[in-house]
Length: 79
Figure 1 (cartoon, rainbow, N blue to C red):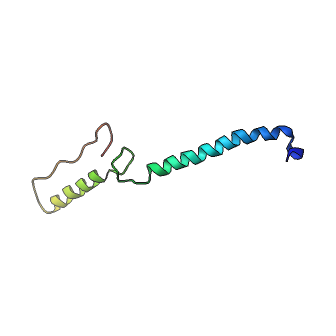
Figure 2: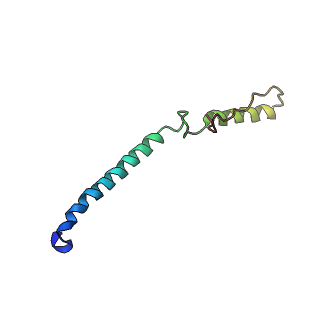
Figure 3: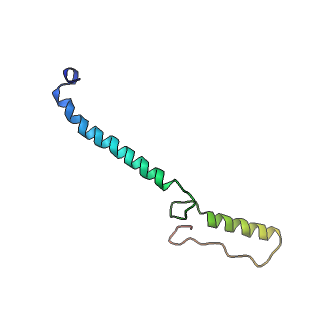
C-alpha cells in the first residue's frame, strides 16, 4: 500500500483507528441507554403517565366523578 499512496499513509492509521473506536464506544452507550425503556429515567417512556391517562379515561367512560389528577411534568420531564 505504501507504493501506491506513499510512505506517509501509515500516519492516517492512528486517526482512523481513533474514529472507529469512538464510533463503537458511542454505539455501546446508546445501546445501554435504550436497553430498558421503562426504568423511569429522563429519556425513558413515561409509562406511569400513560397508564394514569388510561385510568382517567376509563373512569370517565364509567361515569365516575372522583377522578385522580393527571401527572404533571417535573422540570419538563414526565416520569
